Every structure is written in C-alpha cells, then in structure tokens.
Image 1: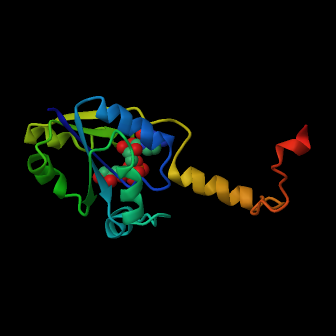
Image 2 (image 1 turned 180 degrees about the vertical axis):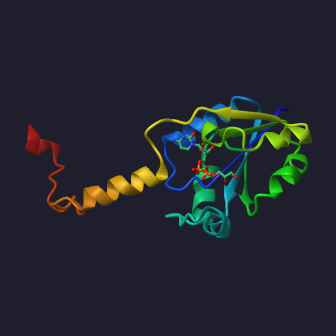
Length: 153
Ligand code: C2G
C-alpha cells in the first residue's frame, strides 16, 4: 500500500486545499495530513488561524481523501515522519517547490503539485473584510422569509 504525506495549516478549508488533498491521495492508497499546531503556526509562520488546531483537524478528518491527521510542531519533524509513518511519497503545493527536496535522502519521492489559482485563506479573509465594510446587512434570521409553498401558487 503506497503511503502519501502532506503538510499545511489548512485554515478556512477551501477548494484549493481539497484539490491538493484529492491529487495527493490519487498518488497512493493512504494519505497522512500533518496539520500545523497553533503554536507552530504562530512561532514559525506568523499565522494566526481563524480555526484552532482541533477544529482544523476535525474538518480534515471528515474529508474522504484523508486517512490520518497528525500535528505539525516543528520544521525538523519531516525526516522522522517519513520513517515513522512509512511514507513513499511527500506532496506539497508548488509554492514550496524545491524546499523539501532533501526528503529524497530519506528514500521518499518528493512531488510538488500546481496550486489552485485565485484562492487562499488570506484572500478569503480579505474579501470578507471588504464585503463587511460595504453597506447593508446580510439576513441573519428567517423570521421574515415565507416558506409556505401554497402562498406561491
Ligand atoms: N494549496 C493549494 N492551492 C491553494 C492554496 C493552498 O494547492 N489555492 C496547497 C498549498 O500549496 C499546501 C497546502 O495546500 O501544499 C496547504 O496550504 P496552507 O494551509 O497554506 O499550508 P502552508 O502555510 O503552505 O504550510 O511544513 C509545510 C507547511 O506547514 C505548509
């Protein structure tokens, strides 16, 4: 059974992440997703996530392509992860191209897949901020919505 691994923050899970996970899983039969802990995100990537680690883990575990979710707590853990989880293929989006080629020394195939254009967690945050700064409120209650089909006959 071919075992694949990938790493990431996966905040505000979106179709770019799903495209990556789907293609990563297609490279084998078992996919391990290593999700950045809240501490690692802040300390090493200066990212403050909207969803915390447990929430991001729960979302990823619900995806059909994902078989196991574990925490990413350091840059150093990749080498040992390859052996601990008997990995055949390491996959990342091509925004990381070249950054993890050293894992070939651990006998692992390193694959960089094209990122899905236009979408990112930071773009989502920006768009939502801009949208909220526009006049008008979105519907928050269903009180004033008429759902009786008879009334539309
Ligand atoms: N990704 C993608 N297309 C997008 C956005 C993200 O293919 N539109 C991919 C990224 O290339 C990465 C994965 O989805 O392979 C997760 O992306 P992030 O959550 O942004 O993770 P990142 O901050 O890149 O952290 O040790 C590696 C790091 O933890 C990776």
